[in-house]
Length: 88
Image (cartoon, rainbow, N blue to C red; front, side, top):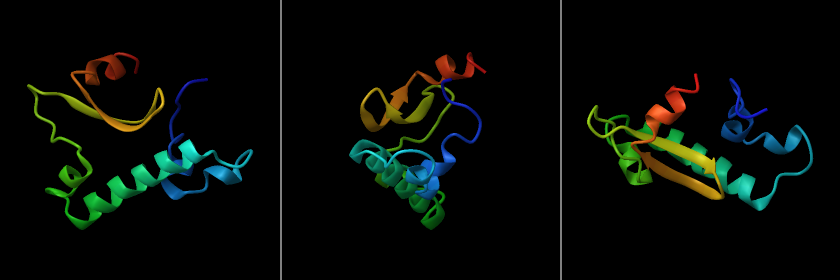
């Protein structure tokens, strides 16, 4: 099915294990990384995500943050934003 609208919410709220089999260690790590990013933003909307190694977006350097992408917990996809926008 791929990703769909609101698919990230169980990971964000830590309820992913409630929807099917118990979560894997990897799923827990991805969930924690997402929660840490939201918390960092809530604590400091201007600069909090830099502490999460999430680079600030600029039109010349389009950075998208990828969670749970091909075995990585979280990474910056520099120049990859267009790939995901084109799928919408």
